[in-house]
Amino acid sequence: MDEVSRTVNYLFILAALLIVVAYWAGSNKILTTVFSGANTLDLTATGRNAQGVFAAYPTGGPAA
Image (cartoon, one colour):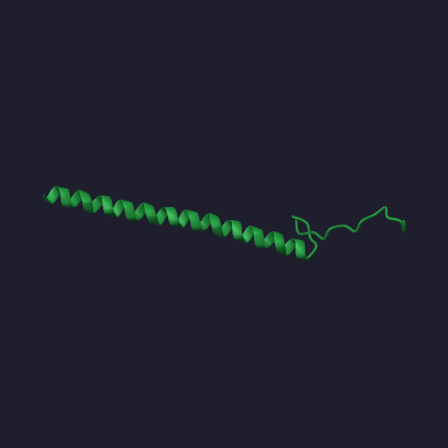
């Protein structure tokens, strides 16, 4: 019976470790996505392109 108890104990520890790793990997991916979206919104609000440079003014309009 002692061997079964030890096996169950190791399986519980392994399951707990896998749950922690899965949640950490998932939350890491979610935070990366959220920060990327916030950066895109900030660039759009400030009129910059993906490289962080201000977009050029349009040319060739009726005043040209």
